[in-house]
Image (tube, rainbow, N blue to C red; front, side):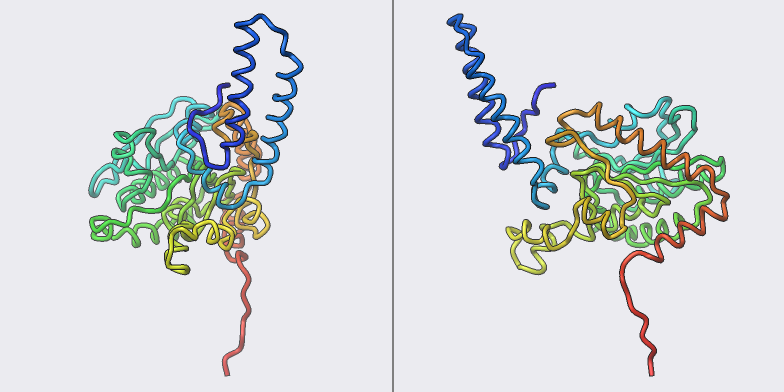
Length: 324
């Protein structure tokens, strides 16, 4: 497939080589000259440069890949993996939040409930989607649909992709922290299998509000963090320009999260990121969903709840000290 037009800073050496390749190819066609040896040399150099760049990405560079505007979003995966998606609207209290969507669908021959955070592709859509930042009514809608899934015994598949819950005055006035807190409590007690996948950004409580699941998956170039690198840098270094340093300190990338037990599986991406081959990426996610869903659906309700409780109790390191 064609290389995405949007270029990240660290990809510029690769783009220059590709321009050289295109120029040589054009010369060969226009002048009817055999330049296959020169073309092969540059193609080899391009492959080598790709691996040098993408295999050794820094945490901050992976954050940039996670935010790539051409990266597949939640609805792209739903369309690729599911059939018969029927979106359900509204929280029955205030309004319908377009940053957090949900509805029923078929994953293969299994009826599921989809809960997804959705960004926009352009300015107009981003305004509608509030740049992927849900407000309280979004989390209340998600909870309503999860309870509906529990009623009809539907597994819940959550797609996380948000820089965080919307922090505006109106969001605070409608108690966004309370809405997220209620979701954390209720998701811990849902009597159906639940799986979450971080497809891009997993920022703060905004991500956690739909992330207390039996299994948590993450794409190779996604991140999951208590705060964005820029926010961390502004607090600790008093300068958002220190975001690369903050990203390193936060240990927010997939490999670190798997090592710490925060996520259960890292889903590989094509070289350069999911946007370079969305079909292959969706196939990898489908395989992961199939494996984990099969395991979870074999468990009794009691076993499901006990294992979920143990999973979150065991996160992190702590010491118990007797108080004298």
